[in-house]
Length: 229
View (cartoon, rainbow, N blue to C red):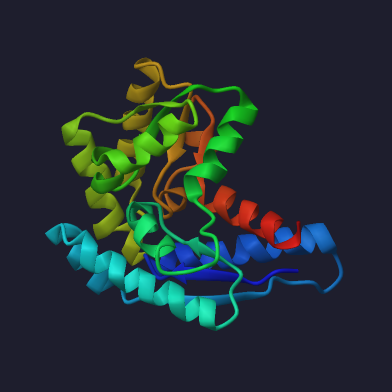
């Protein structure tokens, strides 16, 4: 079994299920008392979030690249960035290490293709929904991406940072997400990507009329498969 390096803490609320999902996948594959070999570097998300909202992606990328180098020195053989938004700086991380980064979009796109879908709705932080890095990466996999309108993007973003990252689950926010997902379906979305690792805390398959692709669960499972391949 190879050793995975997790860059977590963005937020820690979603890093916990990463740890659980990876270990559950290893146990399911190997049985017995097997668990994952991994090293975790958990950042102070307050610092990262401040840089995100200031648009200082270079500084944020440098911080995560430093974390990646520490994980590599600790024995990690591949990296898992336990957040969708910070895949924006994946190139900066890849430039500083010799080990591979297991990209979340590669994992999710493979699942979407296997299910036979081509047009997907995307929920995530404002950065993930509005900046091109995520949709362009999906496009490389032949997928067309739909995002909510501006007011709905603002709501989705606010709920992530002001509620889910703090462990708060609010029924009114779940209702709003249901409405937003339903609107994406009317616009042609065949499925919806929960493109922020916290969103699956709020909504699940019962909340939409189309399949939901939980990036946290998919990314973690693909990482575990890599570790034992």
